[in-house]
Image (cartoon, rainbow, N blue to C red; front, side, top):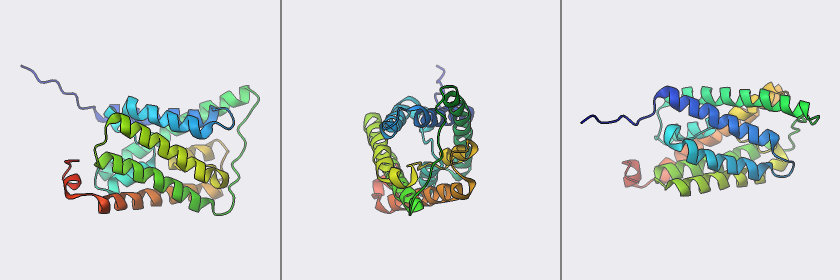
Length: 217
């Protein structure tokens, strides 16, 4: 009897990451004013369910970094994931900004205030800690989707007034491509979340029980 191979190929996994990030950026750009945090959080929750079994639905270089530093994901594959995430985000930005121009409501620039980089760090740290703990603890699909989606909602909520609540280097790069985020600021929007993701992964590894480290959940 032939055993079916149900393991997604690398091409399938990278496509899932690009598509998931595409929808994440699209939801952020086109959500009605005042609903962005909720719409983006729900979109992430949906993508975790829809794409989680294909690629893990990381959709964020900071999340990928956290999974690498927590010992749950290989670095070489992580770099490919990050590239796919950036490609998906940029494509979404190009399409989304074109749609907004046609509607006569072009996206305005993000004007970060105060210690915006610190708020990006804190919001991303919350998100990535949640993701890495959910993964290492082998939470159910429903619990993972709900927890991760809500973590993004909270992260955007606490950082939005200062930084716009980007919390995702791939989205930051796409915002720069779309002229919404200045090149001078985009560096901090990339570095702060990546650092937060790396530290969140290390925290998760420190907090993990022996059985979790062995992959037993």
